[in-house]
Image (cartoon, rainbow, N blue to C red):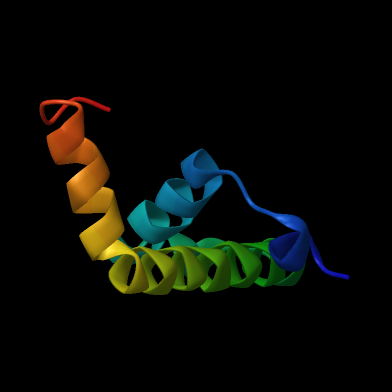
Amino acid sequence: MSNAERGVSLKSQVAALDSLLHGRSLTLSPSHRALQKEHLEAALRTLKWMEIHAPEIRRAMAAKGGKV
């Protein structure tokens, strides 16, 4: 099982997206690129999960007065 399948922290997912969006991934070594790919895949899975569960997330946030 890869790291991405076990779970990648949100911090690592954000860092991978930030690096890709700002062109810093162009100079990564092959092993770092592979790790970044796992983190980007995890970010995609997280966003897809959030999209599926958006109504429940919104209801939970509304029940807490918008605070999480």
